[in-house]
Length: 389
Ligand SMILES: Cc1cc2nc3c(=O)[nH]c(=O)nc-3n(C[C@H](O)[C@H](O)[C@H](O)COP(=O)(O)OP(=O)(O)OC[C@H]3O[C@@H](n4cnc5c(N)ncnc54)[C@H](O)[C@@H]3O)c2cc1C
Image 1 (cartoon, rainbow, N blue to C red):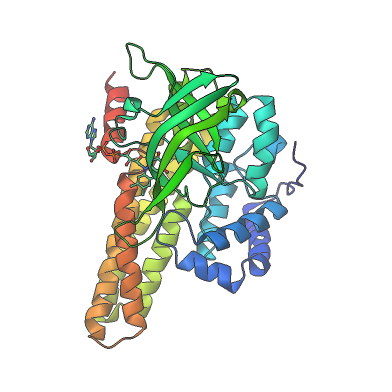
Image 2: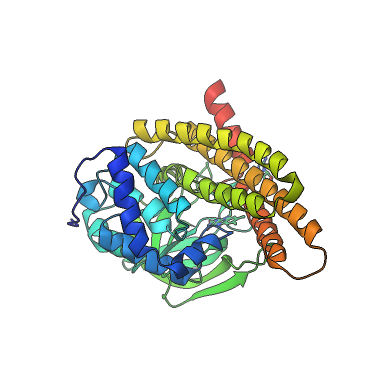
């Protein structure tokens, strides 16, 4: 469908050289600064759009997609190298629900018409997608969701509300779960819909996070018309579609690339501001480096075995839980390093206080990591159920 030239098969050293040559030109100083300044799940949206476009034009925006749909032919190891190099070069963190979650779902389960309509716009960055699943009273217990979709005249009329919707204020589209029927099981009667955020009847209300960032929202729907053609899967069977998407998203959400970014920031802070505690802080960071490398090996194993339609649910839950806890440990270590810097700087404004402010924001932002994409407690339940059954 999309004709991008794939790189010829090459060894890893040649692959790294190719990436670095591109980054040296495409990652301008302002993009690198936006990458460095990121504490939450994506960088400043202007930088995200520019970086998305540059990767698209190079044919590298969706390395994990099949080549026929616009992906690269990189090996799993090369995809991880790409993540590492993005981290090492301070590339912006993309707002990538389309590339990471919905696109792979449509490739696996969308109609040919949905693939034709939506995949090119995900790749070129003209469509940004947010996820409308959670509601007040329906987070871990997602099947309790109440947002209704009533079918009539080739459309659903959607009414209700979603909460904690990351990027609803910047996305022009949402993939959403709504209730079309009730049955003996709450999972029955849920339908997976694709919604244009410009539709009449949608209101987006911002929510500010503990760290001061503004990333997520409440979204209200008042009789929003959604054509039947925007349904993925069968009516009332959206639960299985959502499970499929969540397997894809959870394996993708906190990648080793994101963790290497946090690691790099921590190492830099120790080097520049660690003072007399530098040796001890480095030693402690070393054990986190080992954990991160072990995580990367697990990620590689999963990527290597993975069929395109997603990782197994136990593997996805393992990756999500391990990655988010490691992210939090790295943020704590960054805060420790910055705290020593702050103590040494006293009350005098200096770059050290900037370091402290960043570390505090990063620490607070990563608290959310064990909550989003399903809490770590519910993932542990899932792992236990699967392994014990
Ligand atoms: C930063 C951030 C971004 C998010 N982005 C999105 C988004 O874009 N789209 C979207 O739809 N949602 C999003 N969410 C929502 C997220 O998916 C929910 O917050 C999450 O599923 C938890 O639901 P809840 O907040 O209702 O908490 P609850 O489900 O009420 O859980 C409260 C506590 O109880 C624990 N708990 C609940 N059930 C069990 C159980 N059975 N066993 C053990 N412990 C349990 C939980 O682990 C948690 O500690 C986001 C959340 C955050 C923090």
